[in-house]
Amino acid sequence: KFVTGNNILLGNSATPTNNHVEAINTVKAFSGAGQIVYSPLSYGDEEYGKLVVDYGRKVLKERFEPITDYLPIEQYLKILLSCQFVVMNHRRQQALGNIVIMLYLGAKVFLNKSSPVYDFLLSRGAIVFSLEDISRDSLTFPLNKEQKIRNRDVVSLQWGRETAISRTKALINEAVS
Image (cartoon, rainbow, N blue to C red; front, side, top):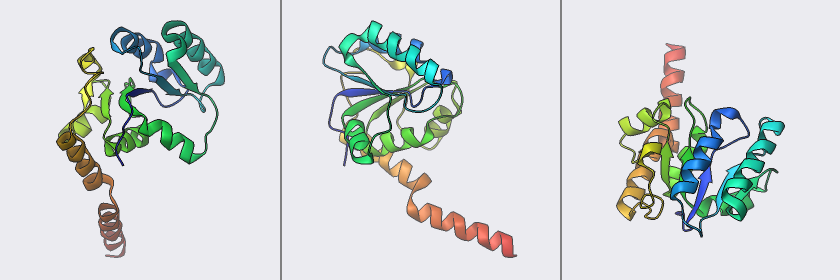
């Protein structure tokens, strides 16, 4: 499956390292009226999460959809598949699982240039963007099919089943020799 919606996934948890305020302001400046901004806040600091909900609703109004409860996997996947764009404003390594899933699903991912994940993915050939690249056009036009397939290949090569098996075998061989 590939993402099919036009929505935005913003952040991954109710932690200050997501830099939600800055990300929400950026998204507000450039996103379209029909784009829902989903923000996972079901774990982390509950008080901080409430502040993000208040701020997101103040700035983005009804377009801000906080995810404050744990959802069944099918429901969460449905939300992810509706998000053509991902904004992760972490300055440290965080949300790698969400980022990898969204790259695999074909989303256009925007990362903070300070995050080591940004350089790591670029060095592997992934097509990712920095927060500075966000513009009206960049949140309107998704990746093309070739770019989506390239990102899926990068993810599969780095974290796919065959790679995991190969690394496990190498680790076992190292341990027993």
